[in-house]
Amino acid sequence: MRLVNKQEILAQIDERAVLAEIEEGFRSFARDEAQVAPVTHLAFPKANGECHIKCAHVGEDDVFTVKLATGFYDNPEQGLSSSNGFMAVISARTGTPLAILQDEGALTDLRTALAGVIAGRMGARQGAKALGVIGTGIQARLQAQLYCKLLGFTRVAVWGRSEEKAATLVQELAAELDGIAVTMAESVEALCADADVIVTATASREAIVKSEFVRPGIHIVAVGADSPGKQELDTALFARASHVIVDSLAQCIEHGETANAIASGDISSDRLITLGQVLLENKLARADEAITIADLTGVAVQDAAIAKSVWSGLKSVEADAR
Image 1 (cartoon, rainbow, N blue to C red):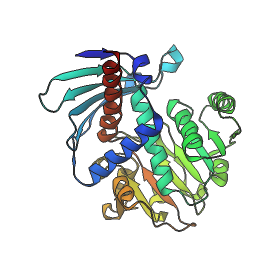
Image 2 (cartoon, rainbow, N blue to C red; image 1 turned 90 degrees about the vertical axis):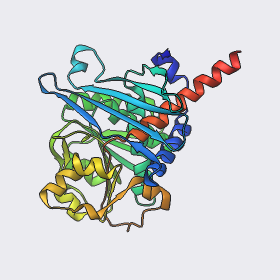
Image 3 (cartoon, rainbow, N blue to C red; image 1 turned 30 degrees about the horizontal axis):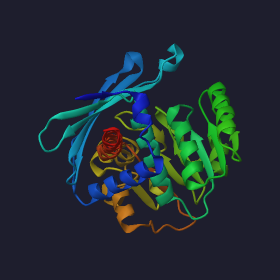
Image 4 (cartoon, one colour; image 1 turned 60 degrees about the vertical axis):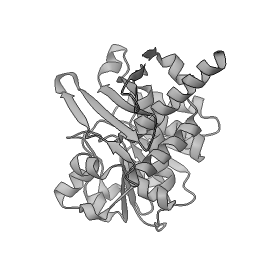
């Protein structure tokens, strides 16, 4: 079994190729061609941390993936990343562990951001170019970078509960994103007033985006509420939405934004459509003035897709070296 460090892993990443692999993973999931196990959640409230364990086998792939990811949100105050973890690549022919990808959470962060890009592309109205990002961490940064790089967004506004962290992220994004207008929003309400797409990327446990802030035409991509007890969106938003896209029916009914809205009676599960189904149909029949929501809790097919991509790249490098 091979142990692969973060530097080796990142050298194999082709964002556009991985994006296509993740899209196909969602399509396979929608066609019932993927095995996805229920998510295991562990909470560490005293340390403001959590752990997720996810695993999947997609189609007739030669390998399957088991992923462990942690999020300990006070770590940056200690000079540590808030994300960590690894992915195990295992033979689907023999059950033999082939590799441990010691990505330190980087693959989970990237696959989450790429799913956000997919959900934004499929759900936003035509001509959307202004992104509002709520959050100041790793995921907020990645979403902003990839929306501009892969979807051609030209404006980014950032809001965070820490004004200092939001200002720092704005400065860093402005330096990284050539030609992109990056600003700090004074409030969530101000951010909502100017955005075409809003991405929420926090570990909040209470609604940040109130229904009255959201004007017609906005598409919301919620990525923070990936475990029980989390919430970023006012449940009343779901009653206003023309479409609610979920990455996994089972997961989103069990926890996250959609689960909160079902519990409050603002939406019923029969109104949900999966991201995989939207990809299979290659469109979302939305009106320009509609409000739409994508609720992403993180599905193991994403992990399987990105781990397979890295593993295939490593094998190719080894073959070329022989």
